[in-house]
Each structure stands twice: as structure tokens, then as C-alpha cells.
Picture (tube, rainbow, N blue to C red):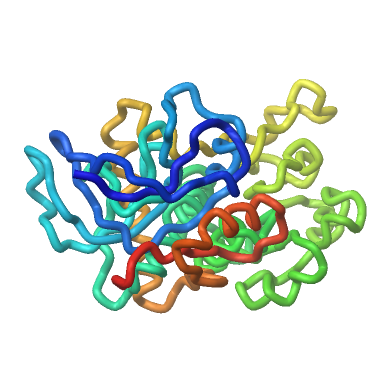
Length: 334
């Protein structure tokens, strides 16, 4: 039995992806096969396409985020059945979601509630869970725990992770400083940022200290590769969640122990062997879907494209400057 998928025959540009026949995967013990309705594109997709991965064999089907309908279940799966709507962040070492169907572990997916379109659900996993893990699991920025009115800095706030982080921090009662180009400042304010800063306007840490009266911020979500430059923006005892590279602490002129640094590697849960970490992927995604259903979180879907536009959509993301999330419809289902 065969299906069709976007495949890469070697490391290269997203535009080299080809829609080709591939074997239909069969779910093993504890696994599901999901017929994909929609997927989204993430920076990890084009980075791995360009550089490859040691676990990949070619031709390889890339893509980590999708939503669709359970088509088949493997032995031992009792909580889900064919016809259930699910969203997922899949193991990037295995064949991915840029396809008609994908096989993934049942304990890492989340049910999509009635009322949330699959094109919306597909936008959430990688970026939404990265923001959620950064704030809630690592920095303690959550309702009932975060001291209302304390600052959170989100660097790269107009992107997918940054846009979700801005909303989640605001929901926790934080005052948010959002960093992006000046053209995106109105967008950041609509998401809940109280103060907006332009990363092109000079020393970011100095700008943050000026906003905070010299104190700095208790929490930073860093998504733009400027972790070292932002160390002086962190208040004593504060923390930084790093999505794109760690700061250079050995050269930091102040005492490094004044802050905590949290590397964020969402997909590492799949390879960790830690069942609780893997199950938490589904828990976090379920929480995000509930917030969307209740109107408490904007899913940030900028545009929904048709399947044939997937390679060009991924290339657009790689070129930079994309606001929110770009979704690709893989079938007519929603």
C-alpha cells in the first residue's frame, strides 16, 4: 500500500521537495497512523532539510507538526480509536508529517476538541509548546504562581514562539516587554505586550534596564539568538529560557550564578526515554487547545495554504520576517 508525501532525496533547499509515492507506514505497538488534514512549517524543518540528520535515510519525509484523524491504531492503544481528531509534534528522527499520513506514538498526541478546526490545531504544537515549556515548565510564569505585575521579556515576539509566549505571559499576569522590528510593534501590542522595543535600536539590555528602572526582568524568553547580549537584562535571581542558542556564560562579566539558564529542546523528549516527558507533550498541547477553544489564546494563523504550496511556504519561512504561523492544508478535512 502506498501514499504520497513530500520527500527530500538529499540535504538541500526546501524548494527541492517532491510530492512522490512512498510506502504507507503501519503503526507498531503503542502507535497511531494519522491521516493528516493540515501541517505547519517550523524553523527546525528547513534547518534539518539543509543540514540533514544522522538518523535520516533518504528519501526522507520531513515535518514535525500536524493535525488530522486517527486512521489506524497499533497493539496496546486503548485511549484512541479510528476517527478521533488529534494534533501532534512528532519525533524528528522519523518520517514526518509532510505527507498524507504519519505514524506517531499515541501517548504524545492531544485530542482536538470539537470547535477547533484542524487547520488551527496544526499551528500549535512546536511553537506553542516551546512557549508553554519555556514559561510554565522552566521559568514558573503561570497563573497563580507568577507575581502579578512582574515583567517578562520576549525576544523575537512577532514569530510563532514569541507570539504565543507574549499571550501566555500576559495571561499569567505578567507585564510583557516584546522585542521585534518596529513594523511589528502594533501587532505585539494587540497580543498583549505593554512595552515594545526595536532590536535594531541599540543595546537591548540597556533598553530593558531603562524600562524597568535599572532592575531588569525576572524572566526572559529568548528566541532570536541574542542570549549573551540579554544577560544584563535579567534581574538578580531571574531566569532565561533559550530557544535559539545558549549565552556565553564564561565571558559574562557579572556573576553567572545570579541567573538561571534553561535550554529549550522540545523534541528531545521523544529521544529521552522518559515517558513522563513524552506524555507531557500531549498534556501541554491539550492545554493550549483548550485555551484556543475558550478564546483565551489566539492561534496566530497568518495564512492557510494549499498542499502544493508547501515547499514555497517553507522557503518563505526560511527567508525570515514571517509573522505568526503559516499552515498548509493537506486534505479537504477540517
